[in-house]
Structures are given as C-alpha cells and as structure tokens.
Length: 550
Ligand code: N01
Image (tube, rainbow, N blue to C red; front, side, top):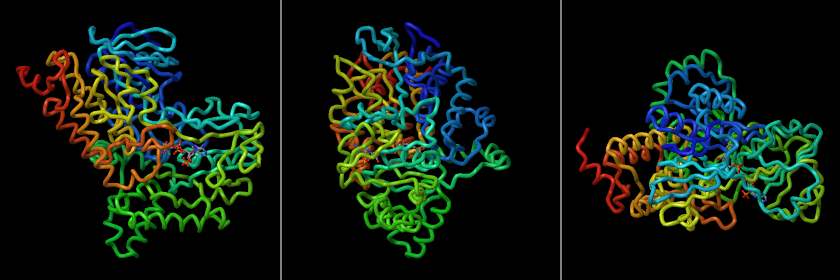
C-alpha cells in the first residue's frame, strides 16, 4: 500500500490497463507513479464480476499480456475460454512479478481530480479526504466497471438477498436449494443462468430482450498444445496485433449475399461447431447489410428451435427485434438448453414489464414470483460511466460531465480537449469494447508511454487535444458507425441502457489495425492534433519541429 503527496503520474484503476500503465510509466519511463484502486486488490473487471459461470469471450491465449516474454512463457492457461478465477489469478501473478501492488493505494476511491492551471498539476482527492498532486493522470478505469441497477420500485423492501453480477460477493453465494430470479439476459445473464440452474432449486428468468448467443465449445488446453503456443507466441502476438479485433479469427469467406446459399450454410455450420464469436466474422456484409445480417440471424433462430424443446419458449427466447451483432454477441455454455430443464422458467417482461419488486419477489402482471435471491444481470453504464464518476475538472473549471453533456468526446479515445495531461486508456472514440481489451490496452499504454518520453526529451510540460482535432475525430467515429448497422439498435454501445444518457455510438468501429496505424501517424507527425500548453493554440508538432533532435 503506497500513498504519495506528489508524483509524476496518477494512474486510476488496477485492472489490466492500470497494471500495464504502472509498470511501463514507472519501470520504462522512470516516472514516479501513484495508483488508486477502489477494490482491495488488482484485477479490475475480473475482481468484481465473480458471478457463477463468468468467463472471458476472448480466447485465453490471446486475452493475456504480450509485452513480456517471461510472463507468457511462465503462465499456462488451462482452458480455451478462461474462467474468472483463473484470469484473476493471472492478474495477481503479473502484479507480483512486476511489483505493481507497491505503487497502489487499494480500497481507495477517487472523489475528484482537479486541474490547477497555474501549477500545471492535477490534484486528486480520494474518498478519505487525502490529496495527491501529479503532472499527469492516466485513467485505467475499464469500460464496463460502473454497474447499472435499474430503478425498480420496492427493491429496498425485498426480504431476500440481492446481487448484481458486476459486484458479486467475494466469499461466493450458496444458491443450493434456493429459488432464484435473474433479471437480464445479456452476456452476464447468459453465462450465469446455466450455472445458477445447476445449483439452485428453481430459477425464474425475467427476460426483456432476448439476445443472440453462440456456443463457446470450451475445452481444456493440453500440455502439448500450450507448449506449442508458447513456442509460437511472438509470431502469434504480432499477427493478432494487426487484426481488426485483436483476436484470432478465421477471415470472412466472402459476402453472404454473393455466395451460393449452400456455401453460406456450410460456413455457418462450421463456425457454429467451432464455437466463439468468430461465428460473426463469417461474411463481409453481416454488419453492413440487412439482408445479409438476416441470413446469420435466421440461422441462430433455427438452432434455437432445434435445441429448445418447448416451441413457445423457443419463440420467446428467439431474438427478433434487432440485427445480430449490433448488441454484443454473447458466448455461452448450454444457455438455450438450460430452458429444457424443469427447474427453469421464463417470464416475458417485454410485453408485461416488471411492476415492482415485492417483499417476496418481482411482480409481473399482478403476480409475485416468490424467490429467495434476486440476481441483477442488468449491465453497466458503459465506457463513459466509469470516467464520469471520477469528478474530473479541467481548464477553466470545465467538468468532464459538462464537456460530455452530448456524449463522450475525445481525440483518438486518448485525450479530451480542455483536460491537459490527462490520458484515457480505451476511452470513448477508441476501438476498446469492439476488440480484445488487452490488445487495445497494450497499444494505448505503449502510445502514452512513448508520448511522455518524447515530451520529456523535448522539455514539453503540457499537452492537450485540440478541440478541432477532437471534433474531426468524433465526426470520423460517427461516419464509420453510420456505415454499419450498429446505430440502429438501442444497445449499451449507444448509451441506450442508461436513462437520460446521450445516444451516440461510443467506440471506433474502423478496426484496431487501422486505428493503430492512425495513432502511429499522429505520433510520427509530432502529435498532430495536440496542443502544447503554456503555448495554448500552438500545435505540438510545430513546437517539436523547432527543437533540434537530440
Ligand atoms: O449487460 P447488458 P451484461 N427490466 O447491458 C436487462 C461484457 N461482458 O452485464 O436488453 C428488465 O448486455 C437488459 O434488457 P434490455 C460484454 O461486453 C462480457 O450482460 O435492455 N430487464 C439486458 O438483458 C457485455 O456485452 C462477458 O431489454 C432489464 C440486461 O439487463 C457487457 O459486458 C461476460 C432492465 C443487461 O444486459 C454487458 O453485459 C459478461 C429492466 N428494467 C459481460 N434493465 C464475457 O467476456 C436492464 N435489463 C463473456
């Protein structure tokens, strides 16, 4: 546990982004770092999301750091899709190896971060009232770390236990013999429901919108397989970095609308059998053309009818309301088959919404569903939510909440106009949640670290995204999203799950490979689009051009 009054950099969050940012800025850049983490240990998302069945939907061999060969050689993954406990152990292993915990204050929530223009410092105040000043701030708060509990009337009067999947008790929950209601059928609900159904006496699923999910086809990774992977790791990592989503995917076989129907069908069959989100990558036109999208969606609905024995239930859990993939595709183990179990009931809360939570359970259409435990798999205030709760105030007293009144705006998802020396790892406008998060995190942290080295070398103390560059970037993010079907759907990508949140498509959908190249070019052009303050109004690249190369 560490706490300094003044450092070079404050890093907020000790998930995968915070661990890597702390390591690089401290051990490569030679900067003093103070980390703050509201949890009692490292792990971020994987520290909080301990619900039964929690796993990653990116394959373990690539959902892991690539920056250190010792780490990837020493760590051995046991399954194709790692479980939450294994990923959390991995985060702890890396933190131990790099001595990360000594730079952090745990159980310490950031209450506010205020820019002092005169001193050129950020003043971070934590919930215990203490302050730390720093030249730079790096937010590493994750995209899905602000849990969303809908305002259900009567929730506080429920006599049983209530848990949100995103803040599951660390000691675990004994569900054996209990009656459980689950609200929410996104990725979390879809993973949790089959696992809960195996333990609980009875499960009532309250479904508002059915979701598309593909089988994970999880399996153990053998010793020989892992040693082969370790041998090819450097090449594999290199390849993955240059893909659009930072994962190993079988490339598309063509456009669904141009291929013969039997080839389309055969490809979907192959990918369904193979398991995982690569199913969505079968064709080039799935995410941009309604008719093409319909082909893949129809295929999933057909599979549901095959798996679910009760035709009424099959109909009810078949997604119809939106194009497949425009809400994040889910990856499951036995989700649809779980509805064949006698201890699982499905209640449609789309046609008849949840009225309130009674003392004994949720009330729908006048009926109270009596349960002992209520599980809220109701999602997150995504991407901007975790940043907005930091109480950030930039130049001229501008708060981040004011700056983002019309939605999260940033330049490259890395920096926000009006907020000097503050960098947002996987912020809005970057590929983030459309990619393997660890690959995106490494790219952002590498870029920030290189930028700080360049600034240090040139004696530049302040840097800030220009408002023009930010506007242009956001226009580009929106234009790319407009070429896809994403903006048509009321998803958390659009902020649509949070009442009153501005509806804008938040991630950059142009692909991580393209994005990486753009960031490279911005740096190579002397950080084009950034202003160096002290000389506000002067582009960073103009200043860099005047400094003789060292
Ligand atoms: O959250 P969600 P999540 N009444 O927002 C329902 C990542 N993740 O935690 O769709 C009734 O997707 C809501 O219904 P509707 C992954 O990126 C990854 O499941 O709004 N229902 C929906 O069904 C994922 O996409 C992994 O109609 C209400 C559900 O709650 C993201 O996290 C695992 C309601 C929320 O679904 C978020 O997933 C888990 C109400 N008032 C999560 N309010 C893996 O790596 C909300 N709902 C595999």
